[in-house]
Image (tube, rainbow, N blue to C red):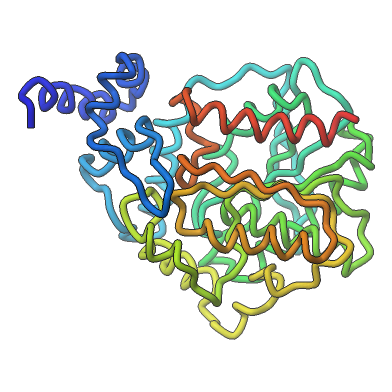
Length: 352
């Protein structure tokens, strides 16, 4: 390697170890792209160089790799999210509250932006149904609240392995139903309550949309599905193409699946794998799939199945992105542009 590039890479690595991405991404674009290395092209898509640099730096950090324990995985996601989240967006008010779960109360957090319409997004965080909490997705909830001009209710559903499937799904349905019932108390219009989530949270959002029809619950105004896991049974080519090196690995996917569904017979249940559920009559959907995501193909298949069932569906394919990009608010550039496309759709759907 060029000695100057090697020195810059070591400096960038130290910045990341100190949980400071700002100095790295303040470098000129040409320097960042050189640090990222030769462009990566797979399946006709070219990885965004800023994300490529992030992945390169992540691989150099001590402790990177497969999860060693549930506790370590939970702590690791919290640290990693803090690194990529950037400064938190200011909102008018953040309120801690409780909402109804399937068996008792759940913690939740309501974000109210300074300029808000009457829409409300009920949001379920990602993390493989095993990790993640209100804090790991605090920055994202603030960002979508501000940019989309909607209230956001983030729900702290119960996690596996302490609460295996279908507990998280039942918590999500109960919490969404509660939000619709209490929408006016939260300052929202009951007809403008959306459901959304990323990854495992996208799975739960898809389940909620289906169960609203099955259980005669008022449907969401929109289902926001960010790189959702929708099939815990099948396997598609993107799982092999991006099995390692692109944030979410095949080893992690299997680790999460085993913790969430220790009973394999539950995996075809639509509350676990919504791709196997009834799709007719569901709420309009926005499905977002990154080009370098092992879950890409199942997300694309779900969007196609929704469309075939007559559900108004918008598929945002983001060819240069990776799994988890919506939370990477510190990067800017192409990642920021992709985030803003999501927010614009939510704003349009919930501010008629």
